[in-house]
Each structure stands twice: as C-alpha cells, then as structure tokens.
Image (tube, rainbow, N blue to C red; front, side, top):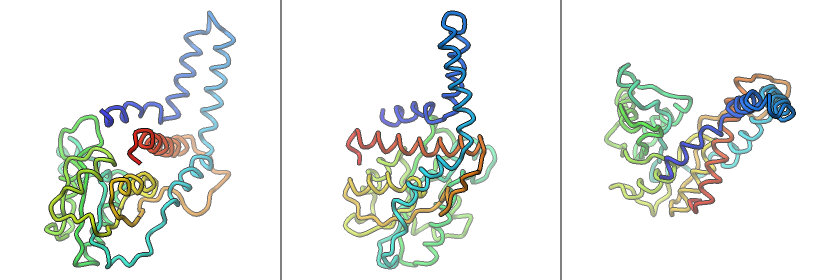
Length: 255
C-alpha cells in the first residue's frame, strides 16, 4: 500500500502538471468567475516561466547531494557494498530490445563493478525488484545480473535481492539474505540525491553503513543566469520527489 501511495503522488512532483491544472481551471471558470480565471491564468503563466530558472532547483539538489559526502573510512576494512537498484530501466522494453537499459543512474552499477575488481574480498549486494507500477519483463536485479555478466564481473560474489520496491524494502529485505552480516560495516552505493533518505532508512533498521554517493546531478557551483524550462522542470521534479519521499518516510516512522 505504501508503494502504491507513493506512486500516486508522482503527479504532484511535476511542476508542469501544476501549470496545466491552473490553465485548465482558468478555462473552466472563465464565464462564471472571470476574476478567478484571470488569476489562475496569470499564476500558470508565471509559474511556467519561473520553472526555467535552474539555479533554484539545483540549489536544493546540491544541498541534498552534499548531505553525506563520500566516506573517508578505508574501503578495504568494510564487508562489502550494498548497491540500490534504480539504475536499470527495467520492464518489457529491455526484453523486447534484448539489451541492458539504463536511466541516468548507471553509475550505481559501474561503481559496483569497480569495487568488485578493486577489492577481491568484497561481497556486493544488489537490491531491487522494480519501482514501476507494472512488473512485467526484466526486474532490476535480473538486469543487473545480466550487466555484471556482460562486463566480466565475478557474479559469484554478488548477492541479488529481488523483492524490494522502495528504499525501505531495500534495507528490510537485504538484512535477511544469506551471507549478509549486519554486525559489520557496509558501503552504501546510491545516487547522491537519494543518499540522505537511504542512510536514514538503513540506520533506522540497524545497519552500519558508510556512504558512497554517485550519479551527481549538480557541481560545486551554480550558474545563476542559466535558463531552461525543460531542465528546470526535470530538476524540480527530482528535488520534489526526494523531499516528498523523505517527508513521507518521516511521517510513517521509517526514518
């Protein structure tokens, strides 16, 4: 139910949807309430053009991404790495095309391969079923296994958790896997934007984790004058998604 509720909020995460709603209200009430219609239209137009100032959403993204910098603990002292799914564009399309398909977070898996090669004693845990409404086609873990195999990684050192549909389930289901010792310290690999919620969830469930953020959306500096409605809408959606997710987890006692 929590998964379904979280997906139902995806509409409000997209600022262009709000623009469309304001303009639709303006059209609907134009004859009966012309003042309200004008106000809704003006608000919609102003919101549309304000979305293009990318410095605002990127400042939020940067704040989230810098919450947990990469750990300074010697990596060879850790038990291994827990890699959260979400880099894979799982579903029917991957089966139809016969390829491993990524979204923008492919660094999660490429980092896992680097760790396997650099630290021979590491165990890598990949956790993730699907974050989509439908679960047809390949799951995230199935696609990750195929990618590791194609890249020549030692798949025998990778444990695949194939049930989790959100971050809380990543932490919950992984701790019951054979070969996973929760008493040891683990490296947590996920997108930098997603790291604050991930660290809070794993620590809440008793994990000892060190952050390795990847897939950064922002740099150290912001370009104040940069303007892009498409880029701004994308960045606002990412920021709002993570803020709503953290708030929902806090309200339900998951962090």
